Amino acid sequence: IPLLKQWYQRRVRGVLNYYTNYYYKSNLSLSLPSLSCKMSTVKVHSPNVVYAEDHIESRYEYSTTAVNVNSDGSYTAVPRNNTMVFKTETTVPKVGMMLVGLGGNNGSTVTAGILANKFNMCWNTKEGEKKPNYWGSITQAGTVCLGMDAQGKEIYVPFNELVPMVHPNDILVDGWDISGMNLGDAMARACVLDYSLQKQLRPHMDSIVPRPSIYCADFIAANQEDRADNVLTGTKQEMLEQIRADIRDFKEKKNLDKVIVLWTANTERFCDIKEGLNMSAEELLNSIQNNEEEVSPSTIFAVASVLEGCTYINGSPQNTFVPGVIELAEMEGVYIAGDDFKSGQTKYKSVLVDFLVGAGIKPTSIVSYNHLGNNDGKNLSSAKQFRSKEISKSNVVDDMVESNQVLYGDGKGPDHTVVIKYVPYVKDSKRALDEYISEIFMNGTNTIVCHNTCEDSLLASPLILDLVILAELCERITVQLDAEPQPRRFNSILSILSYLLKAPLVPAGTPVVNALFKQRACIENIIKACIGLKPSNHMMLEHKIGAPLAQGFNMSTAPYLQKKATSQYTAMGHAKTPSQ
Image (tube, rainbow, N blue to C red; front, side, top):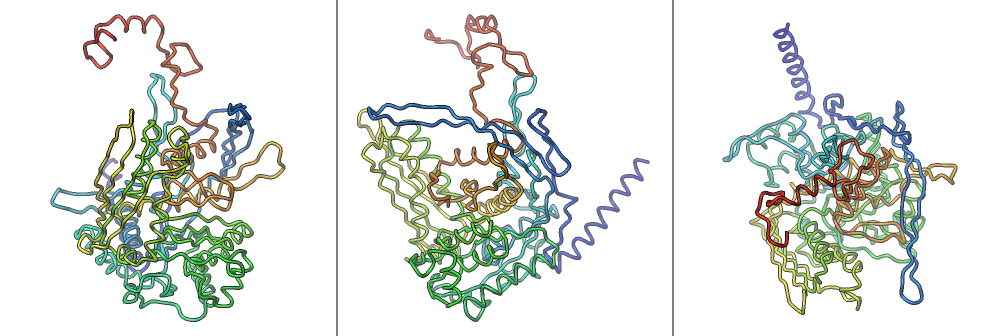
């Protein structure tokens, strides 16, 4: 019987692989959700949490602190509590991802990564056999502290086991590009993946050809003209209608429940924002109708997505979300998020500056230099496009500086300079060099210099997947306050995704948070709230005060602590000093 069972399992796998490979050669959009979709394995036992057939409902106490600044400069803090009910739909939909810039380095790499993982493609390098993974994705490779076990040990679970999420293997891919090159050739042009892996991917990638995209030469660098052989023609209104038709076509042909559109194409120059052009939804729609030159391609894609009811995410630094787009998204009840993937140097910067300022050290000069050789670097060699990137990279430290009036009481932040150079030889392997000069105790100076080799597309691709997965999850969450008769959805501007973006777009009047760990804690704690769990506070009082608390494990006792204190060794086994 065991031998028959093994034979049967091998036959089933063989048949599935045969038909999957057959269909994938002609169509990227085959999906087998039952093979990869991973449902939540965490169950919370609480009177405030209900697991229904199609949703999770949690009654949650949201605690904040209101602060009054008094006339004498003192502060009065008042704790506040708000009761609300989180409802999360647990049915995971069939999701399509449409990439603007599908044939670029990011588009070809994320598509190849999904295929390699789906088919479990292994490949050899000079260092041995390698296996596919989703490392770099917080939803697929990140963990969350759930609590403590009976021995007082912290238990960590994968992010995607808290609530049901879309699995990357099940995401169907389509999109647009101004280059008509098929994705097999685009993958080879990108020079990102190992050659032996590319050989396995070729049969799947060669048949994928991007849809024609919008090309307005004034918005991207002139050096991109030689790639623009797959472009839409006609007026901007006609191009808008074609993009909408493409979204409908993809959704209908692949029988999708949802489509999420994400811009991973070239950085555009900033567009004008002015009365009569794009200050309202009506003005913007009229400007598109009138074929106004100052309406950017990324804004047209955003408008098309919103009108089709699809979440739109901007992975580049340009000002896609003019006031008219934001108003339109609010009117249609559709989510938007941006701007600019945060993957390498800027992510590191948002950690290091947060550490320095939090430690009472005052950064006074930050100089960041980059050189890269991919098409992004080529496009950024143009001054107008570089300016868009410079703005998104430079604002990343602002909230951390503003958080410490002891260090920055004069309101003057550090000198901050960003330089980007195009060096074709290094291709997608971007180099980032940073110098941080800080003032320390008694007018001393501390200097930190670091070098970071950022594999640009391999860092950005997991972010693309996280953005799509988390945006889709947000579409299934509602929150109802006790005093309100109807539940609310999140604001149309999905600032919860700030962790993944350099220049977070936030609702009007909302503080911009760039500190990386605050941004990650936001995502973690909102998902925890969906299942009725409090935020992690890291106090671990049960181990620090030696008093019994409502826990499922035995506490350290005072006599035990005293006994340890009389030992001649520390907990790590080192001999104690006289002070210890």
